Length: 138
Image 1: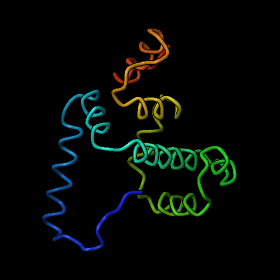
Image 2 (image 1 turned 180 degrees about the vertical axis):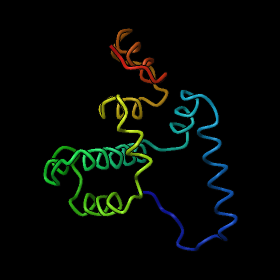
Image 3 (image 1 turned 30 degrees about the horizontal axis):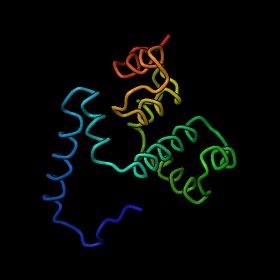
Image 4 (image 1 turned 90 degrees about the horizontal axis):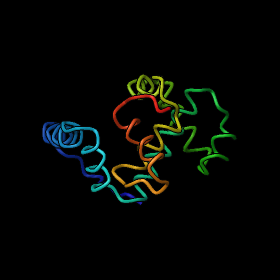
């Protein structure tokens, strides 16, 4: 379980830290950014983020709370909390990205593979490479 201190930083310091973090992750190429995410986050944190992204995407596509809870094995309170934030517009940038041509499964596969080598052989590796470069896989 992740833990963040309840003591708040100065807003200027917090902004600088967040900007530096984002720059470190996303200023390089996509594979390097994924490798950095893989290096920074534990497997539990990666799964937690992947589930949150999945919940947001499924809510955006009008899936029921029950279906989301059964599919992702998450609580209804988590879904409800994220749904309120989605309706408030907190996830609009994410929804714009997910509404492109790639399927949700493609995004989850890309996120969970985060720099890992393919275990399913060369054909699967070609699919991952196509996803990583932003092309639609065949």
